[in-house]
Length: 364
Image 1: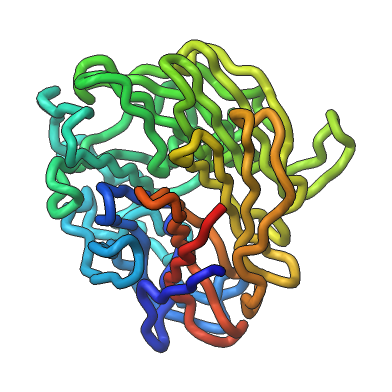
Image 2: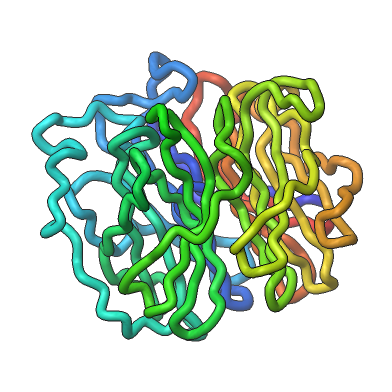
């Protein structure tokens, strides 16, 4: 039995894309990030009004996802705009990316403890292609306040489009999984970056897979052991290995903390019109769960489960199939102590209605 809960919904507004921001949990306390703009049926693929601003928001549940309180994200932006939503608004050229000077960012002092019991990290970006700038925030009070913004380097690439995906290795050591613009300036190619000095500096550790002809973006990573990592990538293009084209999800594995990677499989061979990112969650019994939005009819939310560390995956699970159109998904999922999963995503009941944030509480 799947329980569907409304996290945030307001007539005339467009709430979207939790996958861009992150989800964090401490027992029954869960925090998820998203953004809110204005709905418009003239918005194209995403029914939003590009002339009005998006505002960064976060929702908190203290009862395992059953009820939620919503507020603006308590963080500073380096230029006063919403986080990770530039492609959805008309950007004033006077406050565009080229004016993001280094003085707009704070300098990390390296004192952050990534293993702090109330730690959270959130990444943000200006855009998706060449020229995109990215940064990060840290919190040690369960997202009640955020320190930063701290600038991320461009790692010698045309641009960095950072979403929140990280693995903590120790008090001062953390890996970020990021998307770079390709050599032609288009999105995107995923890589692993690492800090060993408490976030003062990050270095490019490795590229994950070859540079694609289409794109590989929005990594979702899970730690399986002392050195083993599995990452799932949102992919788009004709894949010569399997001779199919479209939008799908690939997985890669590292046995050396992200230094090198090997291709594993394409466990989801269609995520629908425009594609959708995956999110990976390790369950208490060791199984892995992958959730994602499905953008073909019947529109909705889906999942697959692996019992062998991502080598193989079971049949597709339909969490819901009642979406109003393709403009759904971008999930984040956490596992509760009782074994149930909480999957948060954006959704619509009808093509002409507002987009809202929902959660499904379910058992794999």
